[in-house]
Image (cartoon, rainbow, N blue to C red; front, side, top):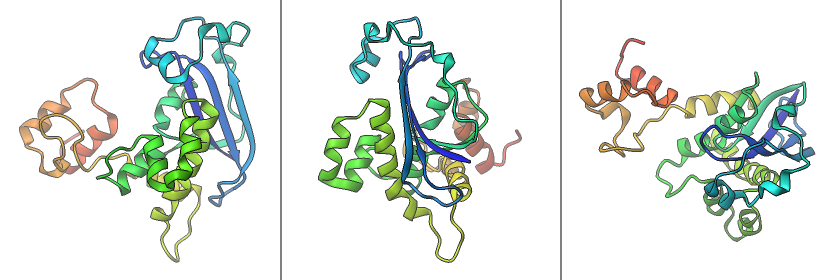
Length: 229
């Protein structure tokens, strides 16, 4: 079984294509061991240019990719069971939605630190690590550098989810990550900051009609308000 911290850099947020994929294979089997046994990093040529906003983030020029393989040649190690990342659903979709379990550090952080000013990866690194975060944060938005940031942030998140006397392994952390995806407070709109359970019913009905509604917010609304699915 492989547990992998994974990150991608892409052409942009609209129909994103991978231009860089990196991962760290962690040492642990069932136990949550964050030591790295091996790493992987490769760039890819998707055959289309990056948007300006994407370029301003990752600084990878289209010309840097001229001799690189196509992104659909990428495959995870055969024994991969868990992938970990910050907003990991995005990276998971970019690599083709493989049949693996996803552990999201963004969801885990929002769940235990709901009032933190920012839940961006570098912001969390500074929150947990102070000045030690600076060299890691300054290298951010390279895929392998972001994997390392995720690993350090996860190291500080894990203690929030350990229960004394209870077993703690990757499956337990995956379950915690899945539960953490369900929002308890609305993060946008005119009712931003309102607990899901306290939202007006007419606003809930309106939200559920939106075609781009996040699947976890939809389930939270349906469950808290006892609506049929």
